Image (cartoon, rainbow, N blue to C red; front, side, top):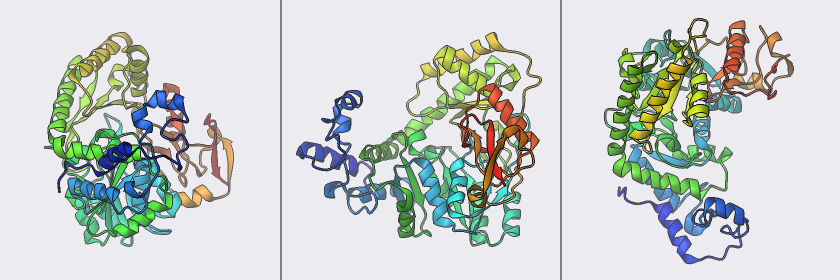
Length: 479
């Protein structure tokens, strides 16, 4: 297909030239009714913030320009079908899981999934079968799914309907996706991929395998992360064995009927950019990341980890564009370095947790900004380094699952002080955001180790979210 096309963008440009008089929504009427908004966002932006109409197609049932944009996207990503998503990759992940699972179905997945996956289980009533990941003892991070652990879960749960894989994890770790896809298909199961952090796999050379290339049935792809589109825009991809009509119906259960043309056009333009220039762009990103890794490791104390971790199984491959840095050896939690970089050096990185930071590199980064980051990290070590003894090391604690997420979320519950909750079954989420991987999910037993982790994360400045109590002093548990 001709990837020079951008049908939604082209239709909006044509619409702008028509000078249509609007007697429809949105009520700002091309920005005239809200001059402050127009001054802030710009007339060109608000003039194409429009509603669905025949010349611009309809996201819920595309038949013209949106359909053409989705066909071009499927072609660019090597998928049978592609769906433009305007509810973020959370919406993509939930639509993917809801397309595969119904109430009572089992789904095999790692526990270090994003909250959106478990949210989908709350919505549909599917039952998780967790493959608890191996943990890197030095870094304290959870790794990928081991082949034998997946095979064991499939043997023990032959009626499961799907296997879900992170490709990659937030830190850049990849499982053996091709092998997992084959195991799932041999057992008559679907294979789903959360590729929120893997958009560039489809366009970069020497990258880990993408879900569609590995033969996965569906993938949620976060175009706004490394793909260059506007925040909240995403894609859902599917393979030839999945009914696109069924997936569209599932999407329409929860996605807005007023799709944003700002988000859709950004997906359209960004897909064109990646299809035409992605290989060159991501080769440059990879070079910058490798250079930054070398420079950070030369500082001393930090460990910017990369492909040297690959072990052929739980770390089958590694996303070399991720600049993940272990900070514990300089005596600082990752979240402390994150805060210092922002507050003292005006540098905003993606996240910091109790042992690591992640600087997200993509097409908009330049070498001079990387030099500034490296210099800041060196200065932080000089100014703040202390004895690392006493720092918590492990990011992941194996959960004890007592009931399904849906059963626990909707069950009778009561609120009790967090410090009195040991032994109780949680009925809500607790997580640090980012990365949004639950420390506790509905249906899991609360242990003293988990409470210690929560208190430690809080003391270091992690942003804890999830519970009804905004101060997270109380937690809902099953009665």
